[in-house]
Image (cartoon, rainbow, N blue to C red; front, side, top):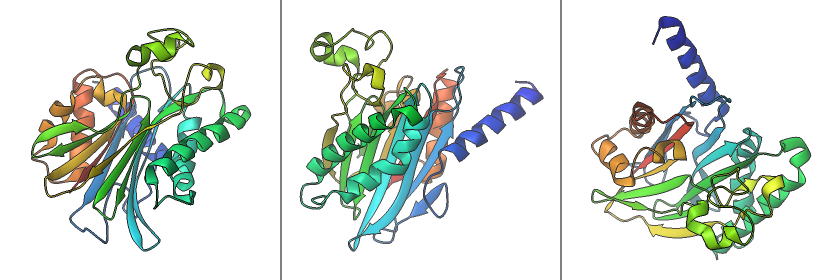
Length: 278
């Protein structure tokens, strides 16, 4: 890479970092009050496609009703980043406003996903015709992790060295019967490579915003979780990703390592990654 191209690449990477501002006092890593051994870090890299960075993320801790919540999310936009930015600003707020969040967290998350998608569609004149996948993870008092997703951004947990996927890849080929009743396979209406997403008003008759939700207990076996956009998962398996950072104690360095590893494997997509280490 020539000097000029290297400087340009670094400028783009910095811009991506700024676009997806994580909401932590220290913008790249943090510690929570309840479990000070829990750290989190992130990294974003703009892809080599002919469009600006479309990924956004959230990585923060906050207190709610005397409980401490770790809020982590990857939003992978398509046809622009406006919907991803909207999710970054609103989805967690909508989830936490649900009246029965503490009583029935899974139902609250599903309702918030649907209501947020409805809001996005109603504002399509301003937000445009694009959409976004999402994977969200809520860590409650360092003891319980609630993961939800639509699309192919993914959450993986590593316990005793073994990687376990916590989200569901909503690819058209995997939901063939549902998609065939509404549109085309392997791409929805010949355009989109996911079967569930926020937004995408012109394709909504083919798409669902129904999230898969999973609850995972964080016990002594839990080592770390990885949330990442498909720019990582297209070129690395769950276990490969876990193995590559298993000896890295710094969550921020681990997230950066994963993004760089995906680049080295010729991923051309935007890459966003969060690592939470227990």
